[in-house]
Image (cartoon, rainbow, N blue to C red; front, side, top):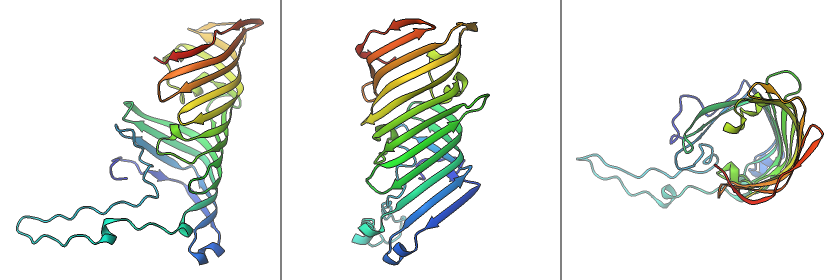
Length: 275
Protein backbone atom coordinates (compact mmCIF):
# COMPACT_ATOMS: atom_id res chain seq x y z
CA UNK A 1 0.00 0.00 0.00
CA UNK A 2 1.65 3.29 -1.07
CA UNK A 3 0.22 5.01 2.02
CA UNK A 4 2.78 3.08 4.08
CA UNK A 5 6.18 4.14 2.73
CA UNK A 6 9.03 1.81 3.62
CA UNK A 7 12.57 1.16 2.41
CA UNK A 8 11.88 -2.59 2.58
CA UNK A 9 9.46 -4.68 0.50
CA UNK A 10 6.26 -5.83 2.13
CA UNK A 11 7.13 -9.48 1.51
CA UNK A 12 10.04 -11.46 0.14
CA UNK A 13 11.12 -15.09 0.34
CA UNK A 14 14.03 -17.28 -0.65
CA UNK A 15 11.72 -19.89 -2.17
CA UNK A 16 8.04 -20.08 -3.14
CA UNK A 17 6.23 -23.30 -4.04
CA UNK A 18 2.61 -23.14 -5.26
CA UNK A 19 0.22 -25.99 -6.09
CA UNK A 20 -3.02 -24.98 -7.88
CA UNK A 21 -6.10 -27.10 -8.53
CA UNK A 22 -6.69 -27.49 -12.26
CA UNK A 23 -10.42 -28.20 -12.63
CA UNK A 24 -11.71 -25.10 -10.77
CA UNK A 25 -9.73 -22.88 -13.16
CA UNK A 26 -12.06 -24.00 -15.96
CA UNK A 27 -14.88 -22.37 -13.97
CA UNK A 28 -12.83 -19.19 -13.30
CA UNK A 29 -12.21 -20.18 -9.68
CA UNK A 30 -8.77 -20.02 -8.08
CA UNK A 31 -8.37 -22.86 -5.60
CA UNK A 32 -4.87 -23.48 -4.31
CA UNK A 33 -3.80 -26.78 -2.83
CA UNK A 34 -0.86 -25.25 -1.00
CA UNK A 35 1.65 -22.41 -0.80
CA UNK A 36 5.01 -23.01 0.85
CA UNK A 37 7.39 -20.17 1.70
CA UNK A 38 10.97 -20.73 2.79
CA UNK A 39 12.59 -18.04 4.95
CA UNK A 40 10.09 -15.26 4.09
CA UNK A 41 10.45 -11.74 5.46
CA UNK A 42 7.28 -9.72 6.14
CA UNK A 43 7.12 -6.00 6.98
CA UNK A 44 4.04 -5.03 9.01
CA UNK A 45 3.34 -1.34 9.63
CA UNK A 46 0.53 0.30 11.61
CA UNK A 47 -0.02 4.02 11.08
CA UNK A 48 -1.07 6.60 13.66
CA UNK A 49 -4.76 5.94 12.88
CA UNK A 50 -4.37 2.25 13.79
CA UNK A 51 -4.57 0.91 10.21
CA UNK A 52 -2.21 -1.90 9.16
CA UNK A 53 -0.45 -1.99 5.79
CA UNK A 54 -1.92 -5.43 5.00
CA UNK A 55 -5.55 -4.32 5.53
CA UNK A 56 -6.06 -3.50 1.82
CA UNK A 57 -4.73 -6.80 0.45
CA UNK A 58 -7.25 -8.23 -1.99
CA UNK A 59 -9.40 -5.08 -1.99
CA UNK A 60 -9.97 -3.02 -5.12
CA UNK A 61 -8.60 0.52 -5.03
CA UNK A 62 -10.78 3.46 -6.08
CA UNK A 63 -9.64 5.26 -9.22
CA UNK A 64 -7.97 8.66 -8.58
CA UNK A 65 -10.05 11.75 -9.19
CA UNK A 66 -9.60 13.41 -12.59
CA UNK A 67 -7.53 16.61 -12.56
CA UNK A 68 -6.59 19.22 -15.15
CA UNK A 69 -3.64 21.58 -15.42
CA UNK A 70 -4.10 25.36 -15.89
CA UNK A 71 -4.87 26.14 -19.52
CA UNK A 72 -5.97 22.59 -20.27
CA UNK A 73 -9.45 21.49 -21.15
CA UNK A 74 -11.00 19.58 -18.23
CA UNK A 75 -11.04 15.85 -18.80
CA UNK A 76 -14.30 14.01 -19.26
CA UNK A 77 -16.02 12.85 -16.08
CA UNK A 78 -15.34 9.22 -15.19
CA UNK A 79 -17.81 6.61 -16.27
CA UNK A 80 -19.70 4.48 -13.78
CA UNK A 81 -17.22 1.65 -14.38
CA UNK A 82 -14.32 3.99 -13.55
CA UNK A 83 -15.99 5.32 -10.41
CA UNK A 84 -16.61 1.96 -8.79
CA UNK A 85 -14.20 -0.96 -8.63
CA UNK A 86 -15.51 -4.07 -10.30
CA UNK A 87 -16.69 -6.64 -7.79
CA UNK A 88 -15.62 -10.20 -8.38
CA UNK A 89 -18.28 -12.84 -8.92
CA UNK A 90 -18.83 -15.16 -6.01
CA UNK A 91 -17.13 -17.97 -7.92
CA UNK A 92 -13.87 -16.02 -8.31
CA UNK A 93 -13.13 -15.52 -4.61
CA UNK A 94 -9.68 -16.58 -3.52
CA UNK A 95 -9.41 -19.76 -1.46
CA UNK A 96 -6.35 -21.41 0.02
CA UNK A 97 -6.10 -25.03 1.04
CA UNK A 98 -2.84 -24.77 3.00
CA UNK A 99 -0.12 -22.22 3.72
CA UNK A 100 3.24 -23.25 5.14
CA UNK A 101 5.95 -20.87 6.31
CA UNK A 102 9.34 -22.26 7.24
CA UNK A 103 11.79 -20.20 9.32
CA UNK A 104 10.04 -16.90 8.64
CA UNK A 105 10.75 -13.40 9.89
CA UNK A 106 8.22 -10.68 10.77
CA UNK A 107 9.14 -7.05 11.39
CA UNK A 108 6.56 -4.81 13.09
CA UNK A 109 6.58 -1.00 13.17
CA UNK A 110 3.79 0.57 15.22
CA UNK A 111 3.40 4.34 14.79
CA UNK A 112 0.16 4.39 16.77
CA UNK A 113 1.90 3.18 19.94
CA UNK A 114 5.13 4.97 18.95
CA UNK A 115 7.09 1.71 19.04
CA UNK A 116 10.18 1.31 16.85
CA UNK A 117 10.65 -1.52 14.38
CA UNK A 118 10.94 -4.90 16.14
CA UNK A 119 11.99 -8.12 14.40
CA UNK A 120 10.68 -11.61 15.28
CA UNK A 121 12.33 -14.55 13.55
CA UNK A 122 12.49 -18.37 13.44
CA UNK A 123 8.72 -18.49 12.87
CA UNK A 124 6.92 -21.54 11.43
CA UNK A 125 3.27 -21.37 10.34
CA UNK A 126 0.84 -24.02 9.12
CA UNK A 127 -2.52 -22.54 8.08
CA UNK A 128 -5.28 -24.60 6.44
CA UNK A 129 -8.80 -24.13 5.13
CA UNK A 130 -8.78 -20.42 4.26
CA UNK A 131 -11.93 -19.08 2.59
CA UNK A 132 -13.41 -15.54 2.65
CA UNK A 133 -15.46 -14.88 5.77
CA UNK A 134 -14.60 -18.20 7.44
CA UNK A 135 -12.27 -19.20 10.31
CA UNK A 136 -9.05 -21.06 9.57
CA UNK A 137 -6.96 -23.67 11.37
CA UNK A 138 -3.69 -22.22 12.68
CA UNK A 139 -0.51 -23.82 14.01
CA UNK A 140 2.07 -21.12 14.74
CA UNK A 141 5.47 -21.78 16.33
CA UNK A 142 8.44 -19.58 17.14
CA UNK A 143 11.79 -21.20 17.86
CA UNK A 144 13.85 -18.87 19.99
CA UNK A 145 17.65 -18.80 20.23
CA UNK A 146 19.32 -20.40 23.24
CA UNK A 147 19.82 -23.84 24.78
CA UNK A 148 16.96 -26.31 25.14
CA UNK A 149 13.76 -26.52 23.07
CA UNK A 150 12.92 -22.79 23.32
CA UNK A 151 9.56 -23.16 21.55
CA UNK A 152 6.39 -21.06 21.71
CA UNK A 153 3.46 -22.73 19.92
CA UNK A 154 -0.07 -21.38 19.31
CA UNK A 155 -2.61 -23.83 17.87
CA UNK A 156 -6.32 -23.44 17.23
CA UNK A 157 -8.94 -21.88 14.98
CA UNK A 158 -9.24 -18.15 14.26
CA UNK A 159 -11.05 -15.73 12.00
CA UNK A 160 -12.49 -14.32 9.93
CA UNK A 161 -9.47 -11.99 9.85
CA UNK A 162 -10.16 -8.38 10.87
CA UNK A 163 -8.17 -5.29 9.87
CA UNK A 164 -6.97 -5.19 13.48
CA UNK A 165 -5.55 -8.66 14.35
CA UNK A 166 -6.27 -8.07 18.06
CA UNK A 167 -10.01 -8.09 17.24
CA UNK A 168 -9.88 -11.33 15.27
CA UNK A 169 -11.73 -14.14 17.08
CA UNK A 170 -9.55 -17.08 18.15
CA UNK A 171 -9.88 -20.21 20.23
CA UNK A 172 -6.94 -22.51 20.91
CA UNK A 173 -3.93 -23.41 23.04
CA UNK A 174 -0.67 -21.63 23.82
CA UNK A 175 2.28 -23.80 24.88
CA UNK A 176 5.68 -22.83 26.24
CA UNK A 177 8.39 -25.49 26.11
CA UNK A 178 11.62 -24.54 27.87
CA UNK A 179 11.37 -20.87 26.87
CA UNK A 180 13.84 -18.49 28.50
CA UNK A 181 12.82 -15.01 29.61
CA UNK A 182 15.21 -13.51 27.07
CA UNK A 183 13.08 -15.10 24.34
CA UNK A 184 9.78 -14.05 25.91
CA UNK A 185 10.93 -10.42 26.03
CA UNK A 186 10.96 -10.43 22.22
CA UNK A 187 7.17 -10.83 22.28
CA UNK A 188 6.20 -9.10 25.56
CA UNK A 189 7.45 -5.57 26.14
CA UNK A 190 6.94 -5.21 29.90
CA UNK A 191 8.91 -3.25 32.48
CA UNK A 192 7.89 -5.84 35.07
CA UNK A 193 10.24 -8.35 33.43
CA UNK A 194 13.30 -6.13 33.79
CA UNK A 195 16.17 -7.58 35.90
CA UNK A 196 14.52 -11.02 35.89
CA UNK A 197 15.41 -14.40 34.40
CA UNK A 198 13.76 -17.84 34.23
CA UNK A 199 12.82 -20.72 31.93
CA UNK A 200 9.08 -21.22 31.41
CA UNK A 201 7.13 -24.38 30.57
CA UNK A 202 3.33 -24.61 30.52
CA UNK A 203 0.06 -24.79 28.62
CA UNK A 204 -2.79 -22.26 28.41
CA UNK A 205 -6.23 -22.33 26.81
CA UNK A 206 -6.59 -19.01 24.98
CA UNK A 207 -9.61 -17.32 23.41
CA UNK A 208 -10.23 -13.91 21.90
CA UNK A 209 -13.72 -12.53 21.39
CA UNK A 210 -13.72 -9.05 19.89
CA UNK A 211 -10.61 -7.93 21.75
CA UNK A 212 -11.36 -9.62 25.08
CA UNK A 213 -8.62 -12.21 25.60
CA UNK A 214 -9.04 -14.94 28.22
CA UNK A 215 -6.35 -17.37 29.36
CA UNK A 216 -6.74 -20.41 31.62
CA UNK A 217 -3.84 -22.73 32.35
CA UNK A 218 -0.60 -23.27 34.21
CA UNK A 219 3.06 -22.39 33.94
CA UNK A 220 6.23 -23.40 35.81
CA UNK A 221 9.27 -21.13 36.06
CA UNK A 222 12.55 -22.97 36.50
CA UNK A 223 15.74 -21.36 37.84
CA UNK A 224 14.10 -17.98 38.55
CA UNK A 225 16.42 -15.04 39.25
CA UNK A 226 15.50 -11.50 40.34
CA UNK A 227 18.13 -8.75 40.18
CA UNK A 228 20.86 -11.37 39.74
CA UNK A 229 19.68 -13.21 42.89
CA UNK A 230 18.82 -16.90 42.54
CA UNK A 231 15.42 -17.63 44.14
CA UNK A 232 16.49 -21.21 44.83
CA UNK A 233 13.21 -23.01 44.00
CA UNK A 234 10.78 -23.25 41.06
CA UNK A 235 7.62 -21.14 40.86
CA UNK A 236 4.38 -22.75 39.64
CA UNK A 237 1.16 -20.89 38.82
CA UNK A 238 -2.43 -21.84 37.96
CA UNK A 239 -4.49 -18.97 36.56
CA UNK A 240 -7.75 -17.92 34.95
CA UNK A 241 -7.60 -14.33 33.70
CA UNK A 242 -9.18 -12.10 31.07
CA UNK A 243 -7.66 -9.02 29.43
CA UNK A 244 -10.00 -6.47 27.84
CA UNK A 245 -7.83 -4.83 25.19
CA UNK A 246 -10.61 -2.36 24.34
CA UNK A 247 -10.90 -0.84 27.85
CA UNK A 248 -7.41 -1.62 29.21
CA UNK A 249 -8.26 -3.65 32.30
CA UNK A 250 -7.63 -7.21 33.38
CA UNK A 251 -9.97 -9.53 35.30
CA UNK A 252 -8.50 -12.21 37.57
CA UNK A 253 -10.99 -15.04 38.05
CA UNK A 254 -8.55 -17.37 39.79
CA UNK A 255 -4.88 -17.39 40.68
CA UNK A 256 -2.70 -19.77 42.68
CA UNK A 257 1.06 -19.65 43.14
CA UNK A 258 3.37 -22.28 44.54
CA UNK A 259 6.79 -21.08 45.64
CA UNK A 260 8.69 -24.32 45.95
CA UNK A 261 6.28 -26.26 48.20
CA UNK A 262 4.50 -23.22 49.68
CA UNK A 263 1.06 -22.44 48.10
CA UNK A 264 -0.14 -18.83 47.84
CA UNK A 265 -3.65 -17.83 46.75
CA UNK A 266 -4.10 -14.66 44.68
CA UNK A 267 -7.20 -12.62 45.49
CA UNK A 268 -9.63 -12.41 42.60
CA UNK A 269 -10.22 -8.97 41.11
CA UNK A 270 -13.10 -7.99 38.85
CA UNK A 271 -11.27 -4.98 37.45
CA UNK A 272 -7.57 -4.29 37.58
CA UNK A 273 -6.62 -1.27 35.41
CA UNK A 274 -3.51 -1.76 33.30
CA UNK A 275 -0.76 0.85 33.78
